[in-house]
Each structure stands twice: as C-alpha cells, then as structure tokens.
Image (cartoon, helix red, strand yellow):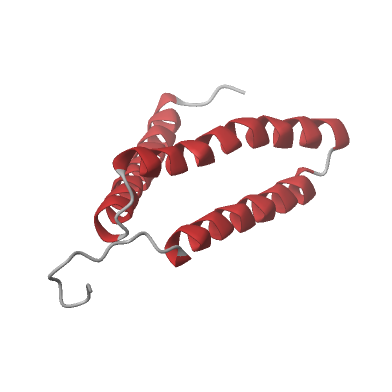
Length: 110
C-alpha cells in the first residue's frame, strides 16, 4: 500500500515536534543536574549517556522478543515498565544524594 506524500509530511511534522519537546526537556534536565544539584558537567553527561546506552541494547531486544514470540503488547509493556523503573530508580538516587551544593557564606551553608 502506497502512503500519500501528504501523510508522510504529517507524520514527519508530528515526530519533529515531539523530538523538539524531548530535546528541550533533556537540556533543562542537564541544566538542573549541573546548576541545582551541583553535579559536574561530565558526570551529568555520563548519567544521560548511560540511559542512551541502555536504550541501545534494550530496544533491539524488545524488537527481537516481539518478533520471535508475537503478542507485541505484552513484551513492550513489560520492557517499558522495567525501563521506567530503572529510570526512576536512577533519578531517585541522584536526587537523594548529597552533592555538597552548599557554599561558604550562603544562608544554607555552614
């Protein structure tokens, strides 16, 4: 079945808008890690890189499992939940860690 060009453009515009929003969120997350939490830029970049590397292995695995065993919804749901749990666990560990953000002379610092 041939997909009309106008439909391809519509999907491309929607995907472009979604990626724009996602990248803006990633930029603000990086700023939050460095400015608010006081993590070094290299460490913050490694946190985000770790998530991308994890995705690089899990996404093809999800495709292989769904192609081999069928019933795509079950595997995508399970892998999606495990990915979400890992993401929130890592984010929680970062947010609950003490990064020595207090400076001398601040009202909150010693």
